[in-house]
Every structure is written in C-alpha cells, then in structure tokens.
Image (cartoon, rainbow, N blue to C red; front, side, top):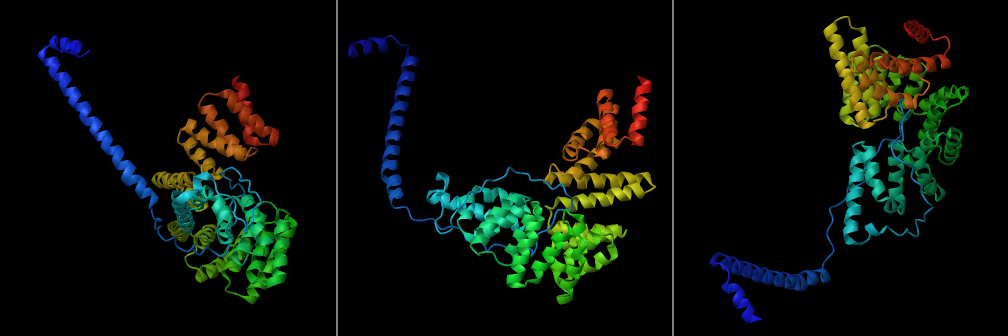
Length: 443
C-alpha cells in the first residue's frame, strides 16, 4: 500500500504535492482542535452544569394601582380581538401542572419576565399587550389568587369580559374578591350581556358591605341596561350616592356619563369636573370631560383635553376616534378650503391611529372610507368600508359610500347591488331610489 502511495505521489506535479501537504496539515490541526473542544466540554461545561447555582432574577415591581372602576366602551361595537379562552376549573390549593416549556430554571426566568412585562403594559394602559404576555403564563397566573385578580382585570380592560367572568367568579366562590375586583366582576357580567345577573351580584355585595362604590357601579349598569325602561331608575340611585359622598370620583364620573347620554351636557360637565378634581391623572375622566366640551361646542378645550388624555393613555382607540370627530366637524363647519384640507388631514391621521390600535374599529374604518372616497381613493376606501359593513351589515350610510365607490370604479353591478340592499332595508330611502333610477335610465 505504501509503495502504491509513493508511486502516486511521484507522478504528481510539484504544485499538486504542495497542495495535498497543506490539506493534510489543515486536517491534522482541525482534528487537534476538535479533540480540545471535546475535552473542554466534558470537563468544564458538564462540571459547571452539576454545580450551577440558581439565577438571581430582577425584582418584579408591585402590581400597579389601577383605576377604581372599569370603563364601558363608548360604542357598542367594541371588538374581542383574540379567540376565546376556555378556562378549566382549577384549585388554588393544588396548583395545576405547568406546561413542559414552563418547567425548569430557564422557564422560571421566562415566567417572571412575562409577568413583569404584563404588569408594565397594564400600568401603561396597554392592556392588549399585557394580555399577550399574560396568556403565555396563563397556568401560572391561575394558580395564585392575587395574580388571578390581576388577570381578570386585564381580560376585562382588553375587551374580553366573557373570559374575565369565570376567572373572577372562581375567586368569588372562595370569598377572595375584595373592593375593586368585585366591581370588575360586576362590570364583566354586564359587558358580557348579563346585566340582570350583574345587578343581583352587586345587590348581594351591597347587603354584605354597604359599599357606596358598589352602588354607583350598580347605577352605571342600570343606566346602560339593554332594557331601556329600566334606565331612568339609575338617576335616583346616583343622586342618593352623591348625597352620601358628593366628591366620589366613581359616582361623579358615571353620573356624568349618564347625564351625557340624556343630552344634559352642562350638568354632565359639572360632575365630570368633580371626578377629575378627585383624580386629576385618570385618562378616562379627562377624555370624557373632553367629550362634554365637544358637545358644548368648546372645541379648543375639547382638543386640549383629548390630547391630555392621550398623553396619559396613548392606547385608547376611542379617544383617538373622538379627536378625529372633532377635527372632521371643524372641517365640515369651515368655509375656507385650506382649513378644510388641514382639518380633514388631521381627522384622517386620528382615525388611522385608532385602527392602528384596533384594526376593526367600525366607525373609524367608516370615517376613513368616507374621507378616502372624497379624495378619489376608491379602492382603498372600499377596503375600510367593507370592514365597517361586516360589523354593521344594515348600515345605510356605509352601503351608500360603497355604492359610490364602486360607481367611480365603473363597477355598476356592485354599485346597484348595494343600492338594492338599501331599498330592501328602507324602501323609502330617497338617495338610493334616485341613484337606482338613474342607473336604470342609463341602461
């Protein structure tokens, strides 16, 4: 074999022999390095693993002090942006087994990191992001009553009241709900469509504790009850609470909302100012007072309050939407073309901020479609109008805008289709009937 190798090398050119020698040297060095790496791993890494000490995790701050109430959505079309969670019955005394990816030291670090991020986002009013982090450690949250209270509030604020109810009811069954968390459960029931159950639940708690805040929340629920005949009773309940405690921020805030729904904007403003005086950094109070100023046609005050509220909580889609409404109304009332363009642009920017937080915000998508249609951007307008129509399938204003957009794109069939839908809903709609006759004459 050696003789054959010598014959082989003797026949190679000098340059080829040098190349082969270099390759051999390189492979030999690579072999030495591999052996060294294996020895290092066997001795140091494995030994270190056997003697590894527990990591010191950064401290997690206390859960932030949330507002003493939870707001109702300004519009009935608040969306649940994530799939429903099916929560199984769990025992706080016997913690459930954590998923495999949560076991071990690294998983413990991951759990604490998600918990801290959940709390930080909740403190910043970014409840959707808080929900995303909390859902990663759901089993961990549900094994601890205090963490379950936090999680129930986040679910409610993130627009998932139906998911909040079983979490908080499980705590209530063990008599672990106190103060704010009782209010959370009452509102979660109401926002899940169970207003009567919410009122009965609060009545039971009022008999046990006689808490004025519970009474104020009960009045707030009655004032927005689906049975309109029950709503007038809220007025007297609010007044009774405020006689006992005239400076109550919760009672003044919700009474201000109640009065606003009845069209008494000046009296609403008075109570909202009292609520804000008690809690000057509560963004909901600031934003709602801005609405009162808007309805009282004090646009500069309304704009300042909306911007102040958004500085406190930039993640509120409804305040962004209301700011857009302010600008759009100013554009409609202006007689100067430059002012109309400026205010319409500001309105569009506010509506885009709204859907940046809630992509399926019904009214914001409708307004964007309306503005884009007027600007000749009909294809983009249709995309937003379709989102609005999906949530409001019988809304005539949306269908009129869609008909107009399709007409400009020379899609007559689609335009007529929306006009016919309108006339099916409202046979006496003058605009749709006129447009449909015009189409028929042209054909």
